Length: 510
Image (cartoon, rainbow, N blue to C red; front, side):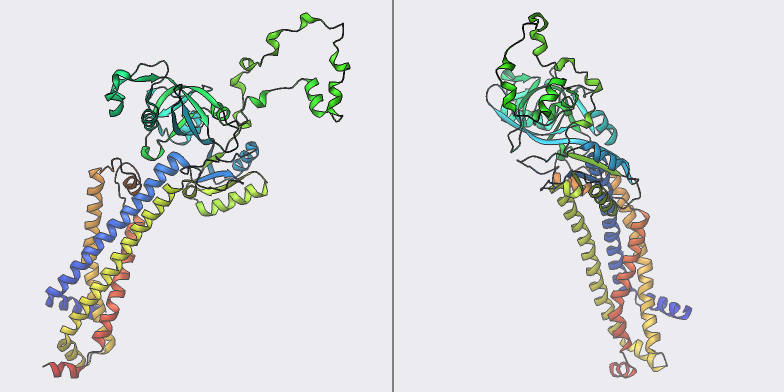
């Protein structure tokens, strides 16, 4: 083996021109494959960090009767089906050892109205804002006003939604109790500054096909934006859970606190004909009744007497649950296990991957990752074709040399091993230098902090707000495997060509 490597090295030095051409191709291909693998890893980590960790979780629970699984990015006029008896779903999630954290939310589309009859539109997330910030690493950033706290009622309008509402309703929203900040006006609003209609509350009306929604007036508590991938999530304004439920006509947590009197419970449980309840005898008030014992105030709904601090939010309606998995788990296997657990518990929820729940966003991420992988594979095959062609030409040009070696006793196997060793040496030297150069390119690209601006596609391609390719140990090992495969496949045909050269062909050429 040592003799073959020595001869191969001498042959490479003897044919420096051809060796350099083949080496340059290997060098360039190695740089592109190394950089491509780093970009794919950076995109994967960016999507994991900025979508999974900051907004959706690894898995999203939806109602079993939810037909459209794209519950996050999709526009659904029918609304998102509710998950009934969430407390049972919660027990299932708490019993799964691979579940790291989870957060139930309400999601829907709402019309925004004003007194002039103008209408706007926004997506709404009904959440416990403190739990949301804890689970999603404070992804909500305050622009004006304040965030919701505890049992606060109100709406957090995104800066993007505020601009859209101004464009459709000519109303500029500012947080209640906070000064108007003129520098935050959009260019369109600034041009109309003298006639600007400034308001600190919004009228929201839930959009659904069952006509159970109603309009509510909600104070604007703050203007917000999302720290990561704001362009994708800015259509989602935040509202407290109880206001969301009221807006869509859902059962609220306060409803679960209502206690019926014994008389009302008897009426609801009555088996007799209800007409008997309205008999003439029941309409006559006993003379022993004291009119003074009735007060008009007692007939009014005692909403104010409910202690909101004691309300258990889990008894209200939810329609989505974001689920995060523990590190170093298999998301696909965990998704199957969670669906099995939910099915066995006979609860009204099923699990889908974040990519399915994210709809077009998940599809775009998959397509872009596929395109990157396709580009690397394309470079992979182009390199094979070019190297194989160049090696074949080199072998034919060395017919005399190889024929003479055959004439003095070199076997086909020896010629094949020598030729293959030459290719491996070129791959090791130039391919290795290419990987080192690729790592340098990745470092430079990372330091440049290239931003995608407002381009949504670039934000997904970058995996976040900056272009940060990452070269990990698995990427380096993958690059070595790719380079080895390219070398082996590219050398196969030229090797056969070299082995077919006979001493007679050498004499004929002379």
